[in-house]
Length: 202
Image 1 (cartoon, helix red, strand yellow):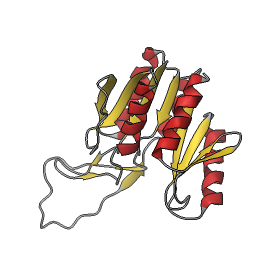
Image 2: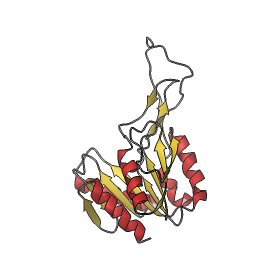
Image 3: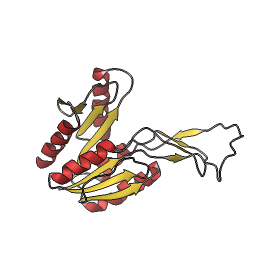
Image 4: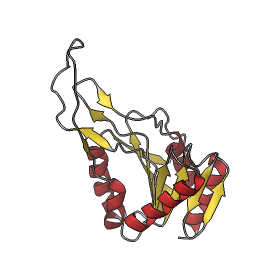
């Protein structure tokens, strides 16, 4: 089976040298890509240029992205790959700078940034991959496990995905794989085993 995995943060330019980004390192997505490759799947990994981690398996095909717009274009291009499963792990920025500056802003200058929302790429996955098994991610900081699972269910309903992995400080340790039921995965290894099982069933 051909699986598509996204991993790492998007970056949004402020000027020629500065950018907005987040704390994602790409570790989880790279680990997932390696696990799926070990399970015998063909893997295409869309990996952020700023990701700290990289897949260990040489069988994983890696394509790099930087901005949300770039990742959008790469996902659209991947529709030609006959992908059967998509794991959208990448931490996509919710905002981009409305008018990035050319050159470098002087360090002595005061600065106000006007931000605008970025497109929600997960909303387009079902259109791009109509027959694929789609898995989104929901990372929450505020609230608790119950509200995080509820947010994951809302994402599934809105985006027409098959499952959502809930995690972050609000969820607590491990991961909640939300589909018809909620499966708790205590660590990365358990999550990767679930991914291997679900792809075998497709």
